[in-house]
Length: 187
Image (cartoon, rainbow, N blue to C red; front, side, top):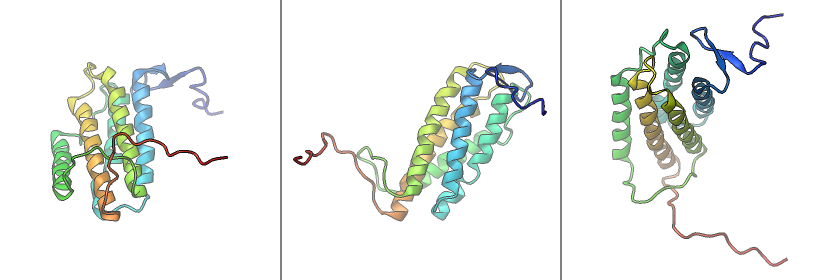
C-alpha cells in the first residue's frame, strides 16, 4: 500500500515545507479556498468567454498555483513571478475595462451571461481567500504582494464580469431599493 494513502485520516496534512499541520490550520484554510478558486477558474476558462476576457484571465490560475506553493512552502518557495509589475498590470486592465464600460451609479446584481456569473463567483471566492490570508499576514515567509494580489484580483474580476455582460447582453441588472416578492396566487 502507498504510505501516503490515508496519511491525513487523523485530521492532519503535510505542507510543501515538510511540516505536518492540522487540516483546520489557517494555512490549510487559505490553501483550500485558493483550490476552490482554481476550480472556478477551470469553469470560467472552459466557458464561452469573450476573447479579451480570456486573454486577461488565462494566466491567473498559474499565479494562484505559485501563490499556493508560497503559502505551503513556509519560506522554501516564493512566487517569483508575482512582482509589483503584475499588480500594476491588473490595475491597468481595470482602468482599461472601466474606461470602456458605462459609469456605475448603482449597485449591480448578479445576473446576465453565464460566463459573467462564473466570474462573479470567482470574485466572491477571491474575497474569501483574501480574508483567509489575513491571519497569515504577520508571517515573515509571505510577501506583501501575495496579499495585494487577492485584493486587486477581486477588483479585476468585477471589471471583467461587467465586460462580459456588456459584450454578450449590453446591460447589467441594477439593484432597486424596496423590491419585494410578488403575492402568491390564490389556492
